[in-house]
Each structure stands twice: as structure tokens, then as C-alpha cells.
Image (spheres, helix red, strand yellow):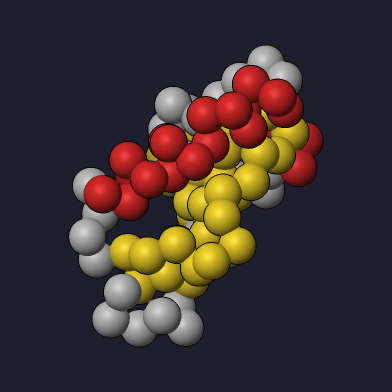
Length: 84
């Protein structure tokens, strides 16, 4: 499975950028992801006027390349994602 990631920067502070996993960018193969990448990234940025692409464009990455989420158990059986 491939996922679409876009490096988005704050429009007001272009030096502050972060990768964003874009919704609707999943595809079973790289070609399927890449064929829709530009349109999905353009449409997503249009909905987020406070963000700009960093100029490198969107990229398609395999599931194994995505960073793992760090989960913390905050109560028995209740987990939340932590920023680490």
C-alpha cells in the first residue's frame, strides 16, 4: 500500500514545515498513488489557506516507510497518540 505525503509549511512562516499524510491518497501501488498525487495535494491545499507546499511536491511512500505512532495507555485499555 502506498500513501501520499505532502510537506506543508505555514504560509505566515514558510520555514515551519511538516509532512502531512493526505486523505484519499492511498493506493495499492506507486503508479496509482502518483497518478493522483498532484490533484489530491492541490485540492487539500485549497482547503487549508494557512498552508503552502514546500516546493518538493507530494510523494508516495510505502506503509513501512511511514513513522510509527507512539501510543500511551492513559487508563486500562484506553490509548492515545503521544507526540514524541
